[in-house]
Amino acid sequence: AHLSQAVFARYLNLTVGYVSQLERGTKRPSGPALALLNIIRRKGIEAIL
Image (cartoon, rainbow, N blue to C red; front, side):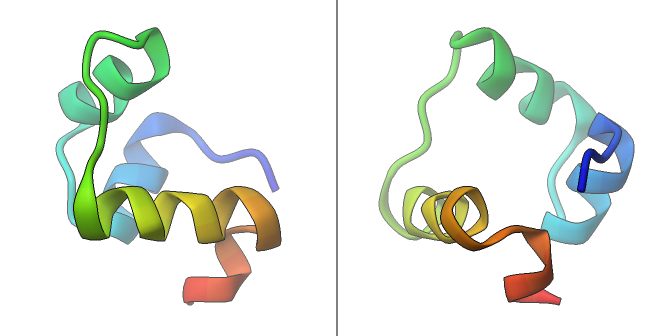
């Protein structure tokens, strides 16, 4: 599923600005955030809902 940055941010309790920075590559997640994003990438957002 393709989500807007705002919806994705809300699901993960992040700011839209942070999601935007992740997409642009100006921020790199680490630790638990990286693990969660990898799960979403592999299995889709439904895996965490």
